[in-house]
Image 1 (cartoon, rainbow, N blue to C red):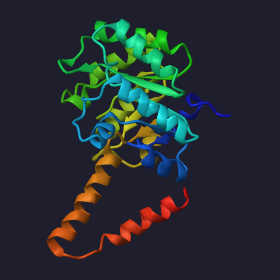
Image 2: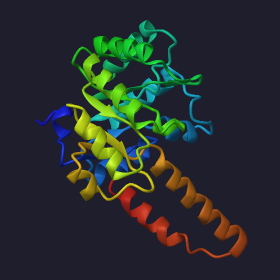
Image 3: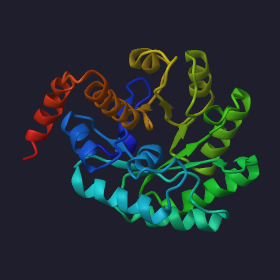
Length: 257
């Protein structure tokens, strides 16, 4: 069987969408996606809370439910490791590696901003030691995602996380093909990107050497957007056009009954 890491092929990217609950995971797996990843944004929204409000027990319990529900690899978003010290990051990654997930990700941002590089590297090394080769570790450089589009610093960070032992490198928020190409050409590990407005097609990203594409909270946000549109149609127009989309969802779920 192909392992999760072996699915990361530069030039033939793994499409790895992000379910936010068990139902969305079942639907995405049924559509043929070969791997899925949790989304802190989407999971928090499903609980009626803002991103960044999750605690480790919630994240790990959610990951276990998804692993028990679908037969494809699951990667879990561990945000910044939910800990101030590297020892705490190590403990959380170790716990995650025992849930049955195939991968975890650790980012270099906290509520106080982007962490200094030596500190971020120390935390990545702690995560690597806890992963023990059991799970694929993705090292995230958050600059572009957090309002600091510094490409040189992002590349320096990804190279450092590669040296620390990360299996996959991820800089969510890259917005041009040139930025993507610069990152891919600067490291020797599979590169993951976040699908977002402004980026070109999957085919173009494949040509640039990308190995994985995920969507973050976008699918959850799209679902909530569809819900709001349906509600406004009912409330403001008094019509039921949304039922055609409802029928698509019903047909998807009929396969699970």
